[in-house]
Structure formats: C-alpha cells, structure tokens
Amino acid sequence: MKFFSRKKPSAADPVVDRLVRRIAEENAIDASSDAKCAAMLTEAVQAACTHVRAMVDELGEPFVLDRKRATGSALGPILFDDRKDALDALRNASKIRNVFADPHVRECVFLLTMHRREYVIFGTEIEGEMIRRDVMQDAVEFRDHNFSAAAPSLAELRDLLTENVVLFLADLAPERLRRDETVRTEIHHSEELLKAQMKTLDYALRESRPFATPAPLRAKVSQGEREMEGLLERLSTLSTKSDPMKCLQEIRDILLAPQHHVRLEAVEMQVGDFGVKSKTGKFIRFHECVLGDEERLAVFMASMDRDNALYLWPDLES
Image (cartoon, rainbow, N blue to C red; front, side, top):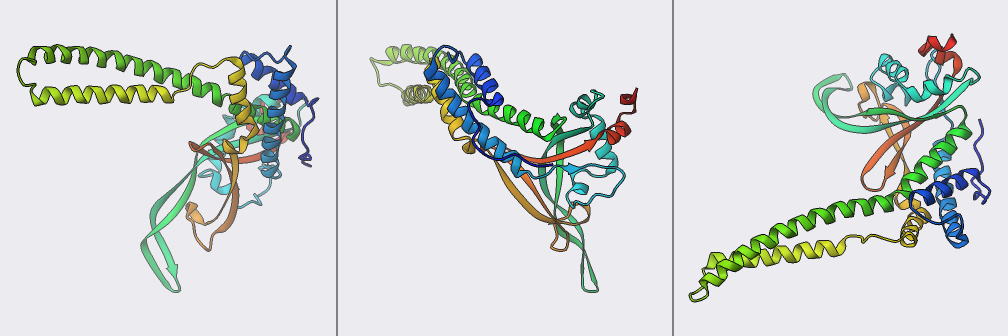
C-alpha cells in the first residue's frame, strides 16, 4: 500500500473545495461571490491540508490486524490489556462495522486514538542471581480507546482525517469568540452585582461623612474599586464580536500555521511484561497527536480484511 506524494494540493482538489465551502457557510463568509475572500480562504485551507496529509503520511503503513497470525509488532500487545479486551473494543467499533456493511468492501483502514498514562508500580527486579522485590518501576498503559475514523481505503481515510482536522482548526477562532462571549456575560453579571454593592457602600459613606470614616468601610470601598478595575481589565482582553472579514482573517491565520495547533510527535520507549518500562523490554515507537497545549492522543493506524470482520460480526455475511 503506497502513500501519496506531499505536493501542494491544487485549487481543483475536491477536499479543499469541500472545506472552503463548508467553512465559508458556517462562518457567514462570502466565498461564492467574493473572489478575494475565496482566494484567501482557499490558500489557507490548502496550507492546512498539506500539513495534515503530511501528518497522516508520517504515521507509516497501517498495522495489519489478522487473528490467524501472531503479531509481528511489539506495540500491538500493549495497546490493550489482553486479546479479549481488544476483540471487545473492535466489536463495539461501529465505524469499522459500518464500512463493512457494504458487501463490496474487502478492507477497512482505521485510526485508533488513546490516552497514554504512565504510572509507578511496585514489582520485582532480577539483578544477576538476586531477586529484588517491591522495586518501584515505571509502567505505561493506553486508555480511552476510540476508533475515531474508518474508510474502505487508505486514500479515503486520509481524506477523511484531513477534513476532520482542518475543520477542527477552522473552528478554533469561532470557538474562542463563543467562549469569550460566555465569559463576557459572566463578567457583566459580576459587574452588576458589584455595582449594587458599591451603591450600598456609597450610602454608608454618606452617612459617615460628618465623622471620620471607619477603617473597615474604607477598606471595603477600596476593595470594591479594585475588583471593578479587574473586571474592566478582563473585559478589555476578550475578543469582540467580529465581522465576517475579521473572522476570515482569524481563521486564515490559524490555517496558515496549523503546526502551532496540531502536530505529531514520535514517542519511543522499551516496554516489558505488564507494560513495565525496562531497558531489557521490547523497543516500541508510536506517535502522539498534540492538540494545542490541552491534549495528547496516541494514534495508531491499522487495517483488517473482510474475513476478520466476519469473525467479529458474523451477521455481516447474511
């Protein structure tokens, strides 16, 4: 199974065309009649597509799942606790099953995503002829298994992943605006409450004017003024509601530099029995997809043929 070249996609690229139309529609950008808008958005989408396609290529050849032969990969056995867990997860993978629902499909290529967890356990360690017990050891496991995308071929999976990731990137700017709008509403509510408190304090100040203002009252007034200044400062940092052209520019800035928001990192380690990291363990190498600074997902691309699918879902044969 060969991978595609990493050349820059042309304007006639159907994936780029679909993405441009969808991003424009979802953000009220006039890309159908405004040639300048269309060109700006197309250029940015092309750049993002090139980056994502290179990420998919970097994953390497899909790992072939076949129950009839032992795994030749050191990575396979540590993805799940045991074979039963792996089979149960696959049987619940509706996206893979849906691909094989078409009787003409002979193969499915899919992406498995997981969260990597590293932790410490107490185990045994052999040193020459001596066995040491209750030794602190680093271990690794994969959790939250999700078969996130599946297609009848690598080409189709590549296009599907490209569209999903580019749409994720394109939604970062509008999502930031939506989040800021929520925060703005909360700040305005806090501002109204603070104004009511300051009004009460102002009445108290007026009543005490013929005399020395009590220190606790002065402190509360000062605190209220500082809190009001803090609220106004927070409001000034929030994005304002933008017009379509400003929204286009924000989306364009993200799509032209996709590596700042989504990238792959290779992870290497040696792992022995029970997921224990050890210098004598098997060498494994996999990739993690880093989404901004918020999340890391271990990604694993695999494939299976129809014969193995029928073992998982016998009813597909009927």
